[in-house]
Length: 116
Image (cartoon, rainbow, N blue to C red; front, side, top):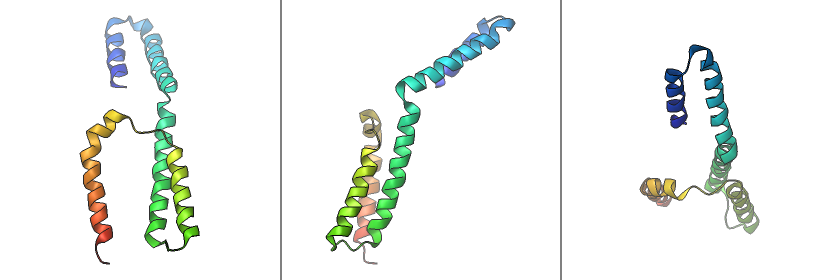
């Protein structure tokens, strides 16, 4: 949306005082239309809901008896539902953050393997 801010600033500089409100309204409509057309809000909400559900699954895993197949399958099903509810992360975003993700996952595995 930073590009929208630049367009709005240029419009304000180039417009007559009477047309400023109309130009600002048009810029806002264009920005909102872009968000709706690309479903950015829906994607963000989907990622947020999936993250919350994954956190709940993670907390269940920490205290679950995984020798009980019913419990294990229930947790796996909850994870699958949480994951299916969100779009995949864009590849360029993943590429930028993969080292950070790998380090966080390695730390998580070390902490899980450490005796309690």
